[in-house]
Length: 230
Image (cartoon, rainbow, N blue to C red; front, side, top):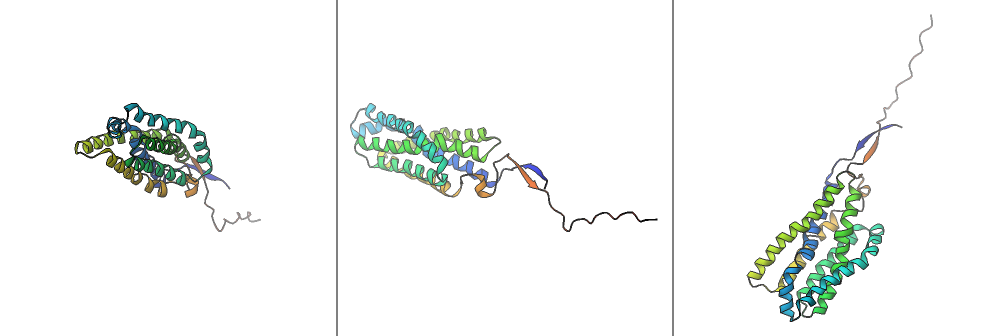
């Protein structure tokens, strides 16, 4: 049976995937990568440690990401991405919550491991993988759009940090706020707005060709009558 080839249109489901990517970079990733330097002198003074000792937690985070990268990539191919993304976002949020009551630098290093495990999936692996599953056309544009919100979020959260510290809020409370923001801006989207692939929703990637069957006529047309004999 023949059919017509058409391109998959942009649907609400496709847009929800992009929205999820935007929200997890705007929240979890921006808070993690764009504000740690602001905490550096404040936390070092509060804990009574050298600034370099606090900065070491970033090294621990990146080292964790390096080690976890191949394992996270394997999990992306075998696990439900909703579970993996939600667990990763929860790790990031809980890491901030841990830092909110940490009075020793060792707990910051533990939180750094949690951040590394969460962010390697959220920022570096899940977004490119998810967008490429859902988009054939303009995949690069949407990946860039999601990544851009790491910087946009960083600018906003940096301003929030400055306002909070100017109001006399201590770093423990700010980390608590960061933890709540990370969870609120990620979990509702990772749990309810994404699926592993568009095929799970009866769709195709945006821009992909789909062959739609030609509609059948019923009943079929009767055969042409033979010419009358003379």
